[in-house]
Length: 547
Image: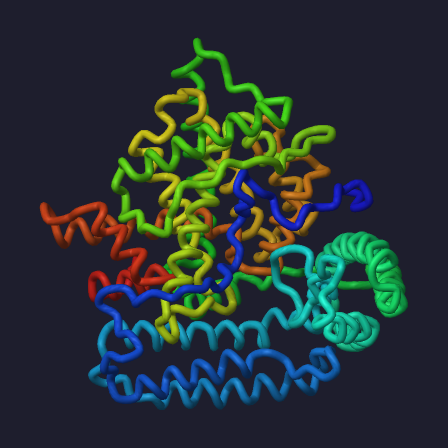
């Protein structure tokens, strides 16, 4: 696959309400409200030693970031060795905290801190992006995914006067960062450099637009911006020249993958389990799709819309139906802050052949919109969670599977309850989506076991996406697979999240029997916060999920 033929990806694949198709880290929100019932608030008594855990957590979250001088983060070998040695000291301090007599909720918080520290340990022992991953040095922050600290988000122009000095410092830091990157990258991996060559071109495109805007509004910033642009171009040419000499094997390997599953993601699975589950989900999705197509074979298929007006009409009808159905279904308590989605007024641009998600959205936007709204609702809920540990955003994607458990689970459960029953041919699109997700999950696993290169995983996904809706020029698929290669388990989370919440629902039903109530179950699940589902199981049942 020639990377020069790939269309530059958008920063987000948006659906109607500017909700990302893929799960992104949930940003902090304002207007905190009291914590969920059953959890301690800031004035409630806590067990002896819990305050020490909170203090250690705050120290760790600050400490894990690199030192920054004049806008340049220090990822040198010596700095990273010191960070790793000091992490071991933090882990020893965590182990020394006596949790005797702690509540279940406090013990869960302890395990969250432990998992995040394990995430940093994995980064230093295994992935080491500062020395292996050229794409890590993204000086322009233009898309979601792992990258160096203080990647620059290019501001809109005109730039407020109060921000001028910071913008100048960040621009002037870029040539220094990239010069250091070439020294730090002592073991660059070919597939990751392949990704960096592509993404650096996207960064150059954005810098070109930024410089053009600066010429109109801020001539004093043009020179440092141009120097940054020139440095990035030089760095990209270096990557292209060095790429043929780099070794491959970008995956973490099965043994390391299993360690990540157990100690960071807190999942009761192995790599082999996930391969089996992903293949089974793919087969189930294809079979279900074909059966639904057969059932409605006498009804015309949903054809894609061809105009903005038709797209907005279909989208806004679907979103209004979704919110009415969400309220009537009583799947979970719809809090007052979860208001009906605002009607979309734009965001539909098509040129050439449709990308995968455009194929879905232009036929029937509801499935992807429901998924995106799940992440939005999670974001709003977490923004009102002021608990000192679980109310914070999770480092190292520790909450990724939990996020998909709700977004994908909510999507799946609403289908069971009849969300798309009034549009018969829509249901087969939901199974098409499941097949696409399962194919990407298999590709994720095979890249990390080093059974597939990035390009082989890309081709595998193309070959296993129904009806050719994913294209070789697909910016969506490109970004998804590079994210999965650089973030173990991310692609599998779409499948494992729903499986975990279904398992937890089963366990709670078996314990409560006739007293089981679906709304109560979902409310309890949400109130636990964005933490691994095994820890939610520990709170709800007094034990973690095991297999």
